[in-house]
Image 1 (tube, one colour):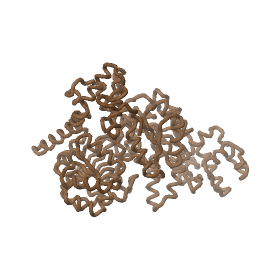
Image 2 (cartoon, rainbow, N blue to C red):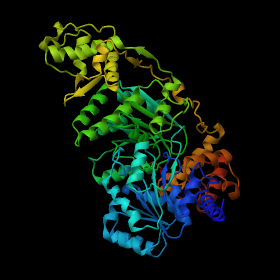
Image 3 (cartoon, rainbow, N blue to C red):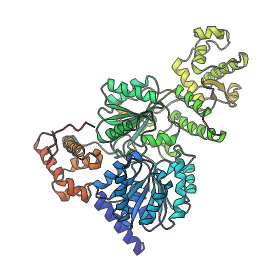
Image 4 (cartoon, helix red, strand yellow):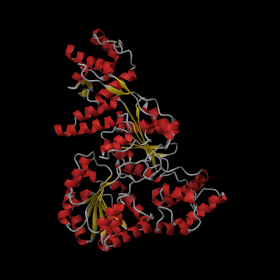
Amino acid sequence: MTLPSVRILHNATDVLRRVFGYESFRDGQQEIIEHVVAGGDALVLMPTGGGKSLCYQIPALVRPGTGVVVSPLIALMQNQVDALRALGVQAGFLNSTQQADERRAVEAAFLAGELDLLYLAPERLRVRATTELLDQGEIALFAIDEAHCVAQWGHDFRPDYLLLSELRQHWPEVPRVALTATATPATHQEIMARLGLENARHLVADFDRPNIQYRIVAKNDPKAQLLELLRTEHPGDAGIVYCLSRSSVEKIADFLVTNGIAALPYHAGLDARTRAEHQARFLREDGLVMVATIAFGMGIDKPDVRFVAHLDLPKSVEGYYQETGRAGRDGLRSTAWLAYGLQDVVQLRRLIDGSEGDAAHRRRLSSHLDAMLALCETVECRRVGLLAYFGQENTAACGNCDTCLQPQQTWDATVPAQKLLSAVLRLQRERRQKFGAGHIVDILLGRRTPKVGQHGHDSLTVFGIGTELSEAEWRGVVRQLLAQGLLAVEGEHGTLVPTDESAEVLRKQRTVAMRREPKRLSRSAAAAPGKARRAAPADLPEEAVPVFERLRAWRGATAKEQGVPAYVIFHDATLREIAARVPSSLAALAEVNGVGENKLAKYGQQILDALAQADSGAETDGPPHSDCGRSVSGP
């Protein structure tokens, strides 16, 4: 290693220890940080919770000038800045939520060289006053967060991100680092091309999140299924429930509240003030469940989200991975749970057919959905399939997903597939009619419903030929035929039509294997940590649990006094380590991961006092050195 590199590494490592309270870098961080500090460009693909932010925060603190962070997350900038200030980092932001005097104060601090980091929304770079401001100050680097937003191939394209290609032309000497947690090889290439990062240093980290248990179940009674999950596996835990529509969000939130679970809705139909209030409460309070559309979540830096549940099928694997990645950012055991059914597939196919854009755009959407369906219907390890989608091949089965914990079975569904396809084809050819899945299943089961009788479908040769399967099993056959491209959805009513490949099945030129609907995973299996390649963090020893709860009570009241989220004080993982170690001095406390110099000076003695009181069996109705005896569960 050259002498300049040793100097750079020493400074970066010093910042890591003093400011952030960690002894060593994670895989790949050191190389990227050293490269950016030396003035090089970088493209970082790293999973949520993997430490992406340090790849620009530390270089911004080591290099002269202010690190400018371009982020689409206006609603979260205040929390990001609060978290940095709690570490002793001088940070600020400029966005449309500020009053004029607030903006002027931040601008003055930037011009005076008093800011380590400045957060901007991408659209602000279109404002001439912003570029003129940046030209007058010293810029340490540009960090482009959520860089997948520049890629039209990706799932979250933002036109404003296309402007960021001009950063190199306007500030050619300033290094740029683009970062994302969600990128397939195709998206990776598009980010590189659109931002002009062909010569940048690339870091593609391991996308695995071994602490997350992935589970996908057939949708039966989704509200009841969700309620059981929350009551049996995550009582009192913070989590996110994703729904496809605004009305579903409202209904599910009301349902959870009625059943004694603290829940809030979040969707684009709510006014901005309500959305901001609900988001703030979710970040600041313990144990809240946010029921939301995908309008919620990007950049949510709440480390103790213990579960992410989907009640509707995500449109892409990228979206699913990003959304589930909001669970367990602290590395502790968490759940990603998805319930999906036939109607989800029909609805998404219909949305794709009616979407704006050209045929290529619809093909792109269809390919995203096909990949998501393949993940849902796989009989192999879900994690292996998920990682393969992001280009991470040759991984071993994880032992911590539903298909590993309860191995799946396949069955020869060729004959049922022929019966169903034949029913669809006969209706289309003999009667010139098309119907949805429910009516087709009624015909196969021989049900003389009013609709069947009205159209005379009880006279069809396929009427009643499918009594060997139940209605639920037939709906599973339809769903899997759609997933395999052997059946398609057409029109706004979601009617079923054969595909070109259907003929091969009907002519007995192709067999059809299907995934047998599994029985519900037992609670003991669901709770098992599994055999992840990197074991999920162990639970606290029983004797440390009261200490941990004492520390959480102190943290909650302290956070409420300061008006910041609890994780800004300390993450759960740090409190767990403190509870397990029970340090008796400030020097011993400083050795705990996540306890940097600023937090040690600010909170160190309070923590030692809390540990002493916990050891003596004192009541835990408030934090040491605080006159606050208020509940920590308010807004």
